[in-house]
Image (cartoon, rainbow over all chains, first blue to last red; front, side, top):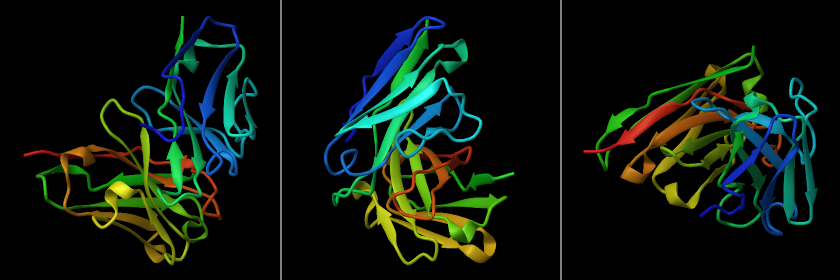
Length: 111
Length: 120
């Protein structure tokens, strides 16, 4: 069971906007930055969003992140077939159990 | 080009040991925290350990404390993970990842991963 909670699946049709939620606690999301990663099938994770809502160079502005309290969200607008992947949120955790925690991942299907 | 290349994975019996390596290039290795993250077959990502730029601080997930040791050699631009007393549940793809200048900076560059299988 992951420290950060994500829905196991999400779906949308091309052109649609989808959001993926990530719920945590005061020791992780509530007091630290949230990061989002995209993992295409059979590949290594790729940084999608850092420090809650910042996009690395090369990441399309269709991807956006937000945070409120102990929850965060990843939004993907103008959904494309190549967005079909697993998405993970992550945050530093101030508790003794371990500095970094991940969500369980959300598999996004483009219908 | 910023690159991380892992090696050292393989098949090992329960209770055995393995040492993973990660060769870094294209950036000033000694300026960054570094991490190991693993992914069991069909499962999600799990952070394993990280290490400060000079090796003076190290953190581990509870499940590997006392069995795994993270280390680095800045002169060789290399990161290591010594894994002892391996268990079946350690079976996973192990990724080397670069973090930022602070411990709470997330992982921004990832290697392609190396597979560790613990089985008799």
